[in-house]
Length: 224
Figure 1 (spheres, rainbow, N blue to C red):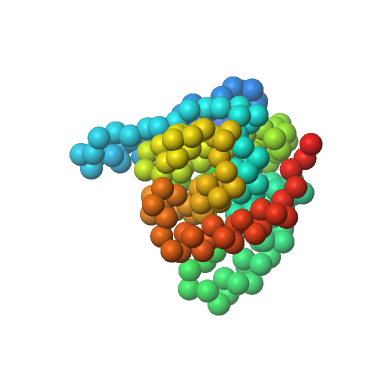
Figure 2: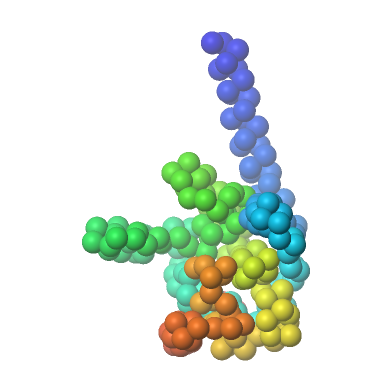
């Protein structure tokens, strides 16, 4: 038993060292590959599909303010006010889920960034616990601007497409810096399920979501 507890203690210590070290490392380094990208590649290969990975990291200065406001409007309107967890949305979700067949989440951009960079997509209580841990770490070590920069570069935006720059190029023959408000709202509308929803060939439902996001974008003020 002593050996077991010594081994367990070493594992825990190394987990904290590596996790904190990784968060500090990605405070400065571009994120070129995420666990989700790797998982999707494995899924494509196992399904005898041609592997697809379109991703190009760009600094936040090279991403349109329209795209920034669109994701905040659609995903996390109190992003600049909370410390990683939106208590207002959590309370709403708890109350609404009492009468909903399909539970709705209350994940913030910080939580989604923590999941995208350090964890895997399949939900479980274990992953949610790790997600909360990494969310606290990135809120502690990163600025809000850095969290948004990593999110905009790592978000899944289509089949094998990740980040604002790649979706702008593939779907609009443009760049992240040139994305219009309408294009940005369509991209943001796909984020709940980018493998089902398309910003290149939007359905009537997507157009409706685009209009909703465009209205909400008017209320989003980016810090100077």
